[in-house]
Image (cartoon, rainbow, N blue to C red; front, side, top):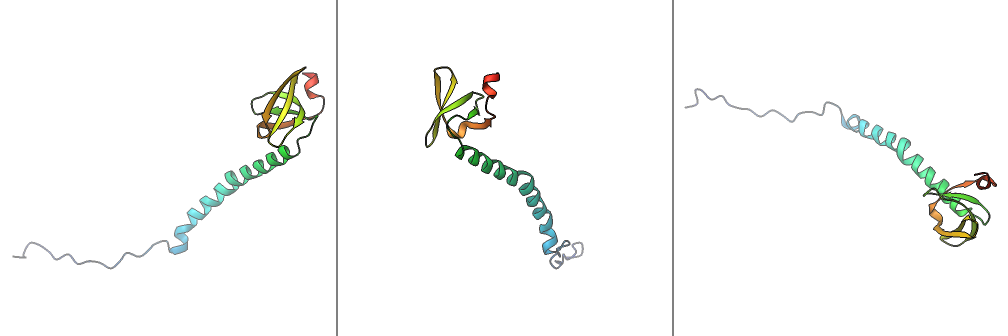
Length: 109
């Protein structure tokens, strides 16, 4: 009966051609690139923003994330009050402040 069917013998397990650590090397390099190109700069910007928010003081001229420029008239725990025009004040979250401007910048505009 077995004239036309040849026996199929199983071969041994295939060896890993790249080796153990060499197979992980591209993954390690990819993680290092992501860390130095994306994660680390983002952490640095977040730290700088936290320092900027902590240093806010009355009289500072600032710009918010919405593009509103104003002079700080009151600093609270999580909010600041900005005077955006004479007798016009708005209350915004401290985290919305994106930049502190040099003194006198808003008077020029």
